[in-house]
Length: 548
Image 1 (cartoon, rainbow, N blue to C red):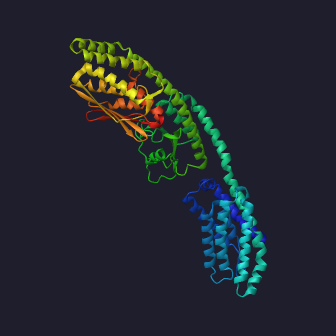
Image 2 (cartoon, rainbow, N blue to C red):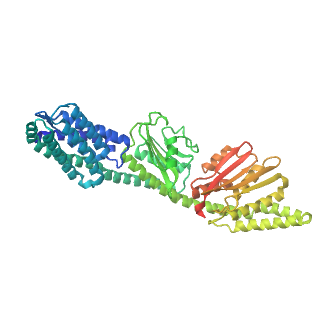
Image 3 (cartoon, rainbow, N blue to C red):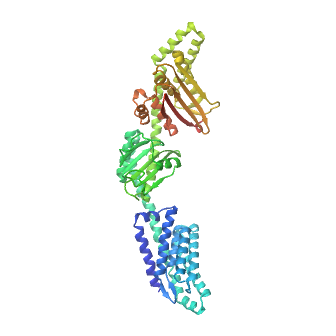
């Protein structure tokens, strides 16, 4: 009888072995944290094993020598009390209902439920290394309890004694199989470490291949990075985004997702807003055409989400545990490389800004116009000429004292005022500038980051149009952030210019707006929001106060 019990336990092991070869079930076995769907699947599997154990039991005087308790205890120890309790209740009720008046039906119902609760307790309280041996002990205790209940509840008592004398020893010793099942499934779970090692090596190989392209991040380099990742992990499509726009997309559906397009899928928005990985393994609704499974991993720099790495497959259920491990490793490496690249780009942008500042400060055309305006005012309006000289002096001093360190926003606003007053003296009523600045705003920002926007609004907005125009500079305290808006009523920015700014394709001789966008994006994670209005242009960005 004991050998027959081991045969039935071996059948359970064979079934688990076959299930472990199926990718979807293997992925569940290897998870560290189970979701509700996983627990339901596992409860169904182990309940099926327990019921099968009942049906394959050996009949002894109305009692069934079976492996039901083995299935209940194994499920609870391996996957927690929900699986153990559900398996115990379902299999116990089944055992009771198929033989309501049987001598052992009620004892089997009671101990099946107790086994589910006890195994769940072991899962939560006992270390993983000791669960197999404790599981054997728990199974034996449950079977011993069953024997005791049979002796107490059997009618006539002699029948109960006869049954127990025959089945007690094989049923109790048969619980050794619990340890074998637990060790087997733990072995499948243990493959996580090997998978992680292999995927870490693959991630490093990909990092080595993509490293040269991180030296200068732009649409072309990001596209090459996506191509390398796609080929090495055999994905159908790979994309990289920032928090608002698609930066690169390679593979299936490439014609639909152009660089610079806004992110449209809810899954990507969810991953970016929550900072958590989003996995869709069976996209039956077809939200992304020709794509059935996808994983979206947020890219983080200094714990701030700056974008996402997206991996797509045309077939369902392709996002396995091993791919998740690889994707997480890749995202961490990409985040680090992008952060290093951004620091280097910041230095380059700072150098460009410094050059631009020096060029502006000694621009003969600018000086000629400013001095001409001063000269024409000396006799007519000496006080105004004196103010213009002070403004020009302050403007030049600020430009020459430029550094790559953050400065108080009020110092930057002073530079804006100096520049605006010089231009207003030149163009008179044609130019109106409105300052809407909250009092007591305290934040440090990069130098020469507001003045170029105001200059752009005046030169490329107001002065290009006919008649007068207004530039409004707004600085608003928004709690943890300060919002800065430059809005004009000029001719309006071309959509093509906006696209080139967002994709870093502005020509070298027109780096002002693009430079500010890149610097803001590098420092704060999100660049300028540029909007063409019915009449004019609106440019907005936010800076964090913690940089004070």
